[in-house]
Image 1 (cartoon, rainbow, N blue to C red):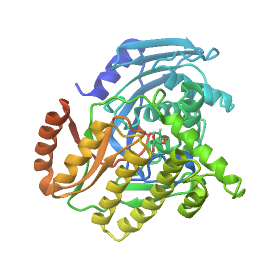
Image 2 (image 1 turned 180 degrees about the horizontal axis):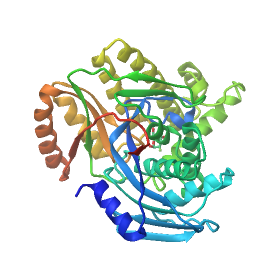
Image 3 (image 1 turned 90 degrees about the vertical axis):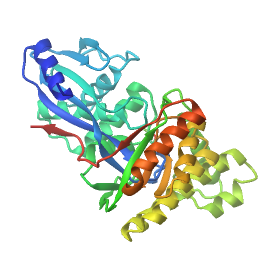
Length: 383
Ligand code: GAF
């Protein structure tokens, strides 16, 4: 039985009702890391790994959830939404935000499971939050626009779960379009879709098998360091709102000697924004080789200047560099574990798989798993 059949079966058995099925994908990000909360640009896309939800309305005000993959359940009331510090918070947080925003809800049943490995940096939490929001919007016919659901998901994660993440993951999962990347301006939320024309080149994820935890990681520290850099520069340039408004000469002149650590963090962000803009131009010109070099540059910055990589991710990128036909590779997402993203010529895919599997094991004692991604549509109902 495939996963959707299992979820439907479990739903019928548990709730004796017919579910609506929602698919909510994970995401990749080609370039532009740790730029979203600095009001910069990102270049993500939704992928063919997803959270699936089977949902229905209930006649009462209760919330009954089943986490199929974890074999765990939650039952509670719509009127007492308190963090549990478990998986249930990703669902409860969204329900709480919908209520705070004044949307009329009733109780719901939900069985969910997925194909996104948790803690692998592919945004299983954003996919789950979007899936719940999308389901509520459908079940109660709330008429909420996609971008507004994205904002509610982000608020759920920031305020209920307690992870101060930016908007990229939710945006990519909800707004994704098959075979396109999203160029998102995280200040204005203006976005455009660019066709991903990479004939003969695959987007390949290599899982480091190192599990990260955003809440306990250095993520919030990095945010605070960026904010400290902005505050420092505002004494010289009061018009600055975020690192989006900052240039390298400004950093070199005022921050490099005064605050060397903050300088390194801010310089990474300013340069990463520029790499993204250059990367978009390269993609438009179908110059994937240049784009790939920018990805390697992004990894260097993340590893040495922003310091959010880990030895295993550095090793995966190092091995990728040795394989002719791998055009670019870098760590992806918050860091400290999860996946690398690689642009690999299809004619060397098998060689790359063999090389990286063998060398990664030899150098780390761990296995890596490769996933060749398809770029899919964002969160949707399965009919
Ligand atoms: C995580 C966060 F959730 C995103 O908002 C983003 O900041 C990313 O790390 C780093 O680019 O995935």
